[in-house]
Length: 297
Image (cartoon, rainbow, N blue to C red; front, side, top):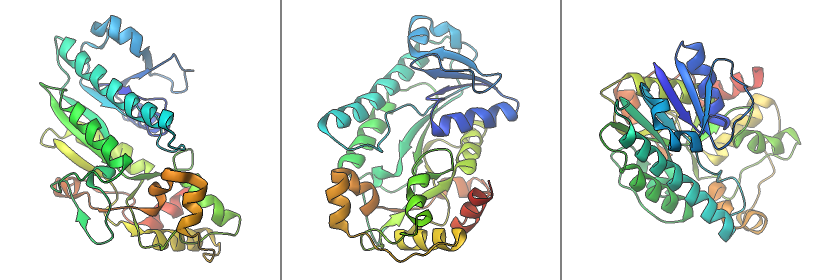
């Protein structure tokens, strides 16, 4: 299948590109600028090129849009505008692209996040749970998903991701670092939930969603066994044989990170009900399995 990946030079995008190429798909990576040919065999286009010549993507079977500025930065007013604008701009660009194509793709997989559910220590969220705007991340995702509804005439998947665990990027190297330095411990009260997923499983499930025509709408891209922050840290300590003893109080995180500390101090217990119902099998369903693989690789 011909698959276009917007944001294909990012952490998940690069892994997805490599996975799809190995699986025999033809891949086009769309980014702001021409990037180095890191993945042999992937065609590369810029947003400007597809805006001027949308026919370059005629025959594309699926579009995956992962583009957007990272949330992992201090949330200054300027950063907040960049985070929001980068998402809305690329979503609307994909909507216009789909509209311009004579032969529509079979499916668009639009990136989203589990923050759309809001935060809770006690509730469990699946794809039928309502959105709940309580803070900046949840407001971003709500607007992101509302904008995605402009993508019409195709099967649309809203990929609600959690914390993606990989060695080459994302949050995990920073989450692991205190343990490697001997100062790992719970953050805040440690009771907040961490909806996580191994990088290998998220690229597999994206391909699964593309190839399964009966999957549509919101899809929780998280492992089936979420853990609390304290459980996450304990497991990191056990797998990497490091102590889990140095708690970081909430006020310290707020002082250092400002509003960004919400990403570490709040969370939600999310279950990938739709994927499980449709028969997707996670290769790393438990955190211990995932961390053991990351340690070995």
